[in-house]
Image 1 (cartoon, rainbow, N blue to C red):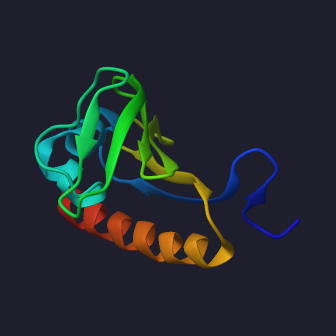
Image 2 (image 1 turned 180 degrees about the vertical axis):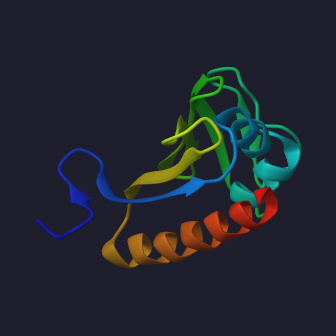
Length: 129
């Protein structure tokens, strides 16, 4: 099976990075208005209720699938699913931020999303450090 193709979730891509910030600070940024605008392209804070709808500036619609404060959010994004997690790093002042997207249509879309998530990660890190 090609890299990035799974039996259950189709094509997927994940990008992660350790950030020199406490996990709670990363979580608050990523779920707050500024962070949500950066990674999701939506206005305002992220809805937290399962099933809550959202719409991005470019018209993509989705809904919250799960929201665990301080840990992860999972949501639909068009026909795909995006999960964002924040986990403690090797010390109290470090966090690991992960973006994972599954149910992508093709290897080409996977590469496009890899480029997208790497750019998003660079912008998030620049804002937080």
